[in-house]
Image 1 (cartoon, rainbow, N blue to C red):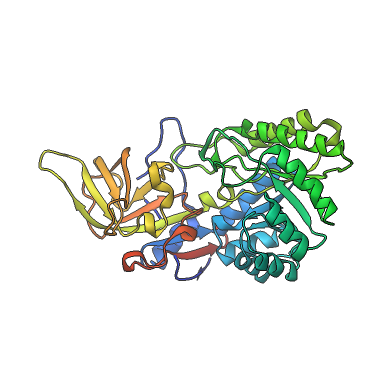
Image 2: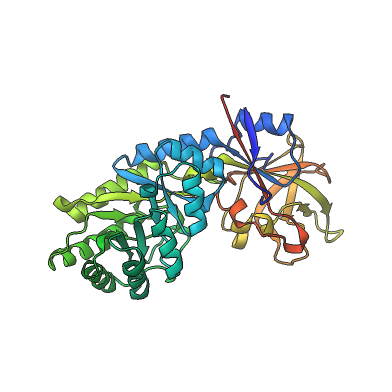
Length: 405
């Protein structure tokens, strides 16, 4: 087993589960690392073998699709390097992510600059580094691509009124289908390769049929462009594949089957090449966030609910507890005895830094300051979301472990 500290940006151990679900697991590699080399808390530990396994599961579920890992989910260099070695491609949102991927072994042609909000200088930088695949959703961005990334392949992102996801994207990204048609037609006039349509079904999409409407819309756009002499070749299915938290997500095979059927139904003989941009489904279950109890207190002599304050909170990487949208499973170093209800909160002087008040958690009654609380399935959108130094708390450290069980 090897371990490395990714950076100073930047866990966990009583499992609370919805009835009928299976307990999440912590790999022996992570257990050994935490036992033999106890790092300062809070910290995130990523099991690279789980990352590889989940990549293989996504590939098996949709073997006809090019897999573009969403780097924003977890940009640890070790994660990017491991995926590049497997032949994975990458969905990036900034020049810094481009540099990261190239430094860790990715080829420029495997990188898709999928953020439709970018400066002209950022487009020019990406093009100079060899990136030739871009997303857009506006005339202004399309003009920048024509001027600074000539001849590149372009996907135009369409608006999608998704349902079934934990985090819908609203109207920030994409444009109406009729505008997509006009932008892709204009892309051809500007000398760009009008490659296809992209959309996003929202993050943590729990409905395997959630891609149906986006695929149908993309097929209508492709048909309209075909009538104008423009043949689209590709379809970018975006992200949304889920990870399992306190509830078990549907099997990835169900998503692959549903997507495959929707493409066949909507595109018929004009079946496009497929791309998909998973993030949390690859790295989410690979992460364990180890934290320490700072304080256990009560707010009233009449209230049995304890407040358990951890040394990590929303600003330390647990942003996805906002609105209690993601309910992480937890373990503690005191598991096995009687338990009682708790509120889980972070350490900062911010009234919003409360993780769970309404989602029911029970932790050991003898839990005390200094005990460990491990938060499972935290590989995605934790270290990459942690603040630089809010209230003076340093960012979440990341450690990656590898090797045989």
